[in-house]
Image 1 (cartoon, rainbow, N blue to C red):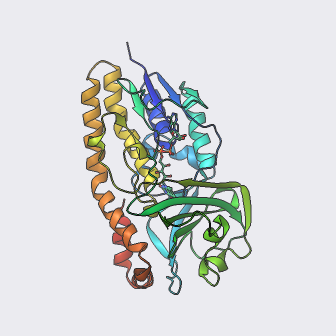
Image 2 (cartoon, rainbow, N blue to C red):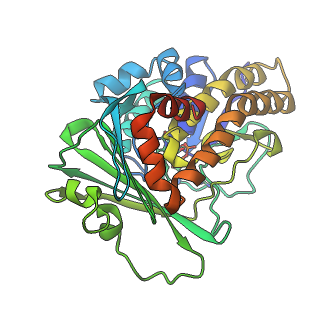
Image 3 (tube, helix red, strand yellow):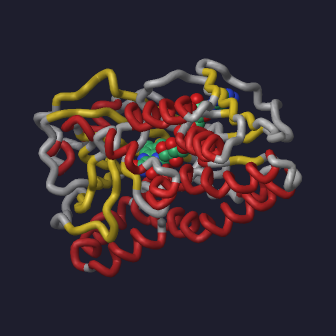
Length: 345
Ligand SMILES: Cc1cc2nc3c(=O)[nH]c(=O)nc-3n(C[C@H](O)[C@H](O)[C@H](O)COP(=O)(O)OP(=O)(O)OC[C@H]3O[C@@H](n4cnc5c(N)ncnc54)[C@H](O)[C@@H]3O)c2cc1C
């Protein structure tokens, strides 16, 4: 006899956990508030240990078949400084979330998982047998700032490197090549909480200030308007999994500052860490509470250090007075770039 599991939230963490549990023979029902396929605000740049998780779960091949592009080089730009393209310490995988999420859904269903789309489960539905994979917890403002993300795909964007990072006083914009010959343009921005909601349009924000390297890069861009999406209310303060009273995976535990390009990896990794304890519960070998504690302590051990580094790195990168010196340092020092990359993964 195996007990069934319900997963609330069909993003990367929920779908990966669902796939992993089905591979272990656990009956899984997944409830997703939205529907597929859909565009998501995301840099669509998968880097770090989550790639090994994908290989172990047999999902790497799935992404390759879906047209994933390998990113091997990066370059940084501020208003007046830039780095030459340099090799990334480890290659990343770039794939549109539109394609990626749909590929995971197909796999989950092929494995016999039951998926209900358009079903928002009330927050109070918690308890034994229910896993929360509902993504970030919305927070209107943090430390006097409101954070929001924008993303759009485009063609005809000539990149100097597979991943370009452009920083400005408003935030940053990352550009990377994805499947289908498109470039993903994704930015994280902040506004003072007391600033009016009028002001720059999303186009202006994503295209950069006149005269900036970003504006130049996107001069001839043909935007795919259907891919545009936005998200607000981001909370970037690190949280620990042990503080949660439920089993949580992915951003439902905590959101790593997006500038690191590691949130998707954490979604895959946390899902993988949850598979064995939940399977043991399903088979009656452990209690729900023991499973929860094991998953939380393994997630905290895996993520605590990178969350601290990510918090500081993002704070430095988004301090306007430091942007030119940081890009100049990144241009000079392989060691600095490698350290920033490795410590946040
Ligand atoms: C601007 C920006 C750029 C980013 N760039 C990158 C990047 O380049 N690389 C990277 O690795 N990460 C990046 N990330 C982070 C990454 O997108 C997330 O970490 C990742 O999507 C988290 O996956 P998740 O499954 O935990 O949550 P989500 O993908 O948010 O999925 C949660 C799902 O739960 C559903 N849901 C929520 N509540 C309910 C409910 N009550 N009932 C049913 N369903 C519900 C939602 O509809 C959603 O589909 C970026 C994030 C932002 C904001």
